[in-house]
Length: 411
Ligand code: PGA
Ligand code: ZN
Image (cartoon, rainbow, N blue to C red):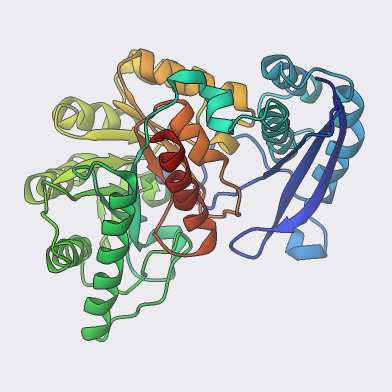
């Protein structure tokens, strides 16, 4: 089924910054649309978002990426078989020719890669999760729901970027969503009652100023119990420290709760959290530039919780392979726009699962109404998804898509 046209549009993401929407039309008239997300706490080795750097949109315009889709990429892809995703993605990678997709832009490349997959699935009249995962696609993921935002995603005083709850002990996806919503609103009531801010961070979680990170964890515990759920049986906790943002590579110290800490001291902070709360995972506990920290925490706590690498791997199969060899972690965060094509994203999940590690399919802090990652989570049977709070349209779009998929799968 040949590709007949590729068009792009400069649209807005959830932070009000421009991003790309790509539309792919096939010869049978089938259409596929994808919208590209954008991160704020990015890893050093992420594929490169092409931004215009001129006056428009404070330099963040994506008209060059748009032109690359409609000119160079369209020229190369029109007439090619949309059912052959691997060939499409290989062509995109070779056409760009740079290690981090900086020439054509990973935003342009990912938009095309995903739009082609959507068009192919629509042409075959099957949902995307079925197209990508075949009859094996069946697992609704456990969501890691980000209810308190800090770090680069909020203007409050919390260093840790994400404080999450996870309804791991609840079976149906729709009951997981319901629990999340009830706990989210209970938390809002608690914050309000204490005169704390109920303003939101970038991923839809609350962003109050607090005295300590333990206070944030205590607030989650209180909300879970007050909402009538069993802590450590139905609902668990999870963190994304995004520690690359806190690291001073020269001094080999982390800026944490108003002072500087070495990796061993930070490890003891995590030990205290793990022993005090039912924590299932800690993402980016150490900087991508501090491999020793990763080895230490995985050796000591890897048998108890998931140690999730985000900035450390940037969804790059080669970096994940190195992590597996070195024992850096036991789980990998998967963000399609960190690597730039669907094929490489699927390879990243495959190598992760083959090692017996867990994958977590993830959104970005700058999102759109695109729901591709919901289908991707089911298609890969990942078991986990991270897609923010249970509020704000760009986050609920993914939860709502998963509710729809659960309904379809349980017929
Ligand atoms: P980002 O944050 O999209 O700003 O990178 C998400 C994360 O760190 O997991
Ligand atoms: Zn992260």
